[in-house]
Length: 79
Image (cartoon, rainbow, N blue to C red; front, side):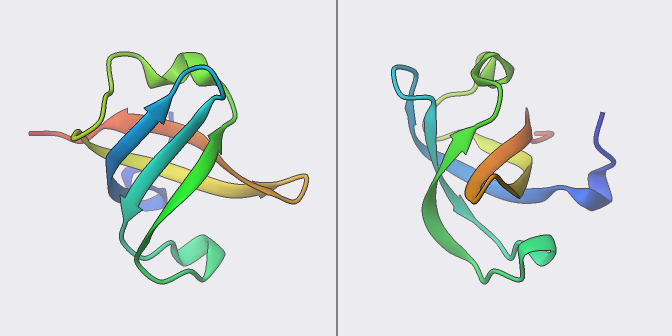
């Protein structure tokens, strides 16, 4: 499990199970030196999405994997 300090916060705006892509409106991604924005990521392991759906607040880790921005960990944010 990822440590909370290594996770970024965001909100799911779209999830496409068919393509394994998730659109997140996120805060700063310090590990990727990226400002807050909305963007599409590939889910490295689509099964990790669980019950998360559009509109949910999440904590996640995004990394550059083989030249593609991928979510390597995602979890529902505490309420």
